[in-house]
Amino acid sequence: MNNCLICQNNTQDSDYKSLCVGCQSLLHKPIFACHQFGESLQVSQHLCGSCLIKPPVFNQTLYAAFYQAPIDKWVMALKFGKKIIYSRLMAELMLPLLNQANKDHVLMPVPLHKSRLRARGYNQAYEIAKELAKYSGYKLDTSLLRQKQTQMQAQLKFKERAKNVRGAFALSNNFHHEKVILVDDVMTSGNTLSECAKTLIKSGVKSVKVLVFARKSL
Ligand SMILES: [Zn+2]
Ligand SMILES: [Zn+2]
Image 1: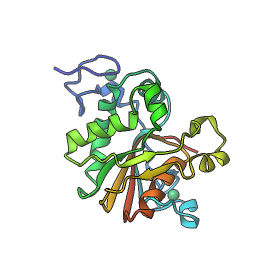
Image 2: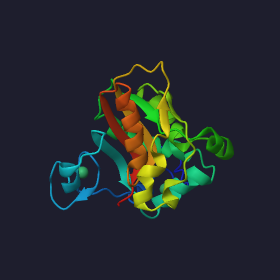
Image 3: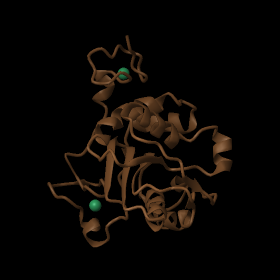
Image 4: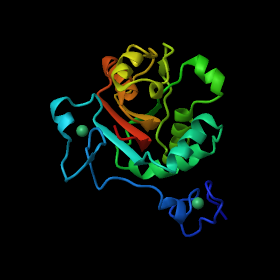
């Protein structure tokens, strides 16, 4: 018998082991969204206006839910409240999205700088990616490193975010994959994920997709 990680209700009628039907109904996604950047759209279109002008460096954005109450609390609990078990719940919800992607991609968590990793004790993106790899059979790769300590993006204005993460990442030399799915808990401006993608593409990666638990609207 499985119980909901959020409310402890029985999950036997649910599509998920870790989330009951009631809690599942709290998740919302837009009817139409931009394929590449994930922003919600009023009508069915492949891309949003901003991607038509200046597309992001990654090919696709996949996410399980909009970042809004009450799932913002789940994200905060995983990131700052040591609720590492929530990574399993998030991975379960992200798993169906992964199946749309090609199996020749490797899962790569957005890395933390080692000083932040030491302070927090874990990287929530790594915890989610690890669970995803376990359930899906996709390969997990941790060759991407954060070489520069950056400020938390959430503490900065949008204009300052791209600059904050510029040059922050590096890829270890023995990396040889051509297709990557970057994994993180939340995407907002996409600057961190863009900078990761740029680092990968510079190193010869041909295709980068983004998979996050929650998409925060700009
Ligand atoms: Zn529940
Ligand atoms: Zn777009």
